[in-house]
Image (cartoon, rainbow, N blue to C red; front, side, top):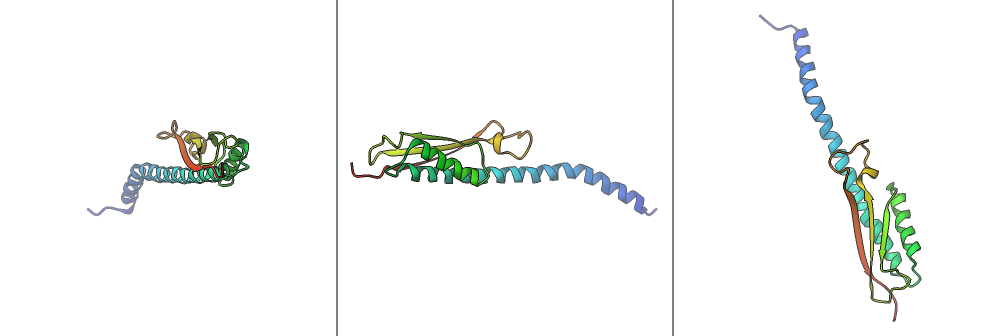
Length: 134
């Protein structure tokens, strides 16, 4: 007894119902993971921008924080926290200045409730030596 087309359509619908959630979960997971890698790279570049600002002779704490925040905002990552140690305006030439830029993953996720990385914080640090002739 041959199968008719109506029975085959029913099988295809059941197969789609079983496979579709896994497929969409895989796609959304790939997008979120890619977004995380992209934001990590933006944080790395923002910390470098901040460190380059910090090693200048006329650098200030506010100027360094502003440079890193402006870079991150320009790349679409808002709400970063910038930490600079030591204060560039009091550092002597040759001192290492560390600029750390971080953002909570939940602030950059495109999903309303990120499951796996929601409680993590993405962080990048750059260290450069202060310029000058002390």
